[in-house]
Length: 268
Image (cartoon, rainbow, N blue to C red; front, side, top):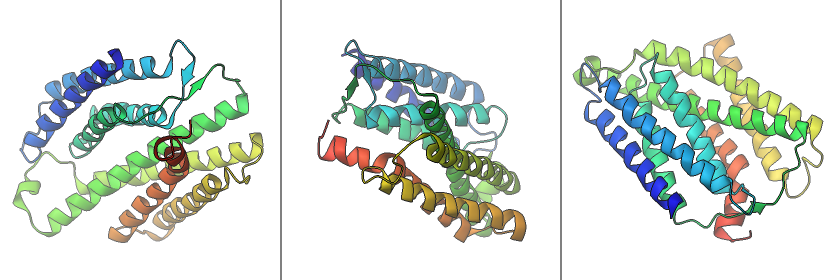
């Protein structure tokens, strides 16, 4: 009952933050920074309490796909909120807050209990998991920046006066931050794959091969886009869709099979 209450409270705060930002999306002064931070902070803290109570149970650690997704979502929300303190991120905030609210609500209806009595702390495994989580979060944030870039660029080309006088960030600033994030995320994904091949056995075993192959394909795409931008100036709509596609592949690699096994097939 505690987890249900906390999830609903966090969802409400996320929805309120989303509604506030969206209501002043094209306003010249933008949403109230103070109110946005208050609502998002309350949501983030309550979300963290949900994670603590969901993962650390009396029976052991519950590391189901849903809980891992909630943790990943929390990291992304914290990262984007922190970025918004220094750089305009008006378009990103309602996306991440809205998704967090949906995920928290959905988690109440999805069976997700995989209890581990004890966790063997292997340094190589910890390094690999940490790098993988960081890489995924950074690349997803880069994808959000790519979508934001595409949206602003399209509205500017349509000579939309509302966006020209809005609080949204300059297009060139968004593009610069996009490729900075993409470069960092690709580097982290490179290290994550290297750590996996170095410290883990059976990366190409039957139960892991799809994850390994999808991750490698994603890495090739991200690397090609990053190299192409820095060396040949690649940019624009095709690059945005390529980044979104690669993010979809890496999401399938990280969560696809576990979601099907745990949620669809209910194999706990």
